[in-house]
Image 1 (cartoon, rainbow, N blue to C red):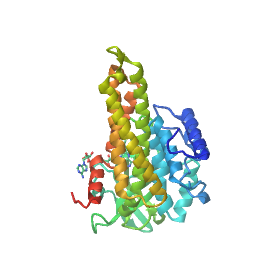
Image 2: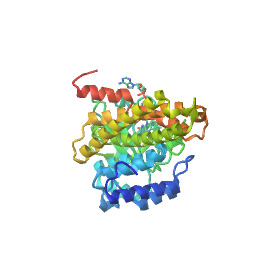
Image 3: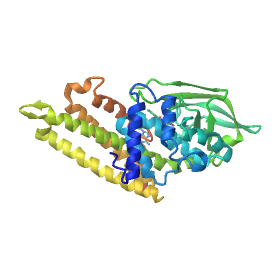
Image 4: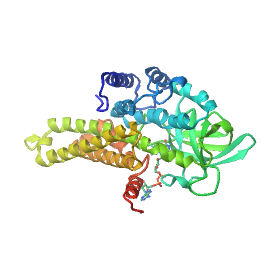
Length: 375
Ligand SMILES: Cc1cc2nc3c(=O)[nH]c(=O)nc-3n(C[C@H](O)[C@H](O)[C@H](O)COP(=O)(O)OP(=O)(O)OC[C@H]3O[C@@H](n4cnc5c(N)ncnc54)[C@H](O)[C@@H]3O)c2cc1C
């Protein structure tokens, strides 16, 4: 049971998400459209969408965290495909879309009939977002969009992509705007990337060549896109943290089970003091990060979560997850090297958590700034 589900209603929802995953998850392919529609019926895809557009507008982020945790316990890829669409990209349409855009996309997203993505990263700009070169140029009644986005979760399957593009050269930090881009428009081409893990999640590259967008595609204020992103990033990092912790807890349990049964030198390998202490240490670290994330969830619900706390949670959850995965791999011995070993898959899938959604170094930068330092 997810640690974030505290009342009977949330526990019931957690169970329903688990049943959904058992029925629809394939480790080797992204969820089918049928699975997305089933997620819509369950209410998973509409948690952040207002009721007037077909969602349930969850009263507490704890409900979202419960869903993320249940999906991430199964795999990072599964939680990633759903959270990027339903939690991360959809939030920009809800918060910054005009009425036309909301009516166009939100009911379909809530029903699981449409999939969303968020496209910030480019071949030449990842951590340094202000360096992006995708450009939207004003034309009669709209915009012409040209550029390339890469490493985009759901990139080759999404129906709508929230794209960050430069709209003015006035200043590095200003002059970027967000657009809702319909991927069926002329001038959009894309393909899936072959990745080392996350075989149950699409990661794609998109190219936009003079794609004509109407004025209603603009999300929020012209040239203020980076500020809109900064506003949403703490919640995105919290969502990443919840997923990291679910995988960390699961990997620890998997490792404990193995360490309590595998014998060497007249004892179980978990009872050899060196291993017992290392397991105890990561268990204590995990409990501490869970407490931090728990506090962040309360703060987010109270609208007081800071960007630095989002960075602390993202940094530490990814680090503790990777520490557990590395120890788990080690204690599983040669059997960890088998491609279908659960610990192997988690280890391959987990490494990217220290890079995506803001690399460790970017998190450290934010925390240092919060301490009044200017690295
Ligand atoms: C599976 C996957 C899914 C993704 N999904 C999405 C998505 O849906 N949407 C999207 O827009 N992007 C997505 N990304 C992109 C991801 O967010 C970027 O890969 C990440 O932000 C890092 O950018 P980069 O790869 O360009 O690395 P770079 O920015 O080139 O950085 C490379 C490395 O340099 C170091 N570094 C960076 N900045 C600093 C610093 N200030 N100080 C010290 N060292 C530093 C870090 O170690 C970093 O890992 C995804 C990536 C992957 C792999």
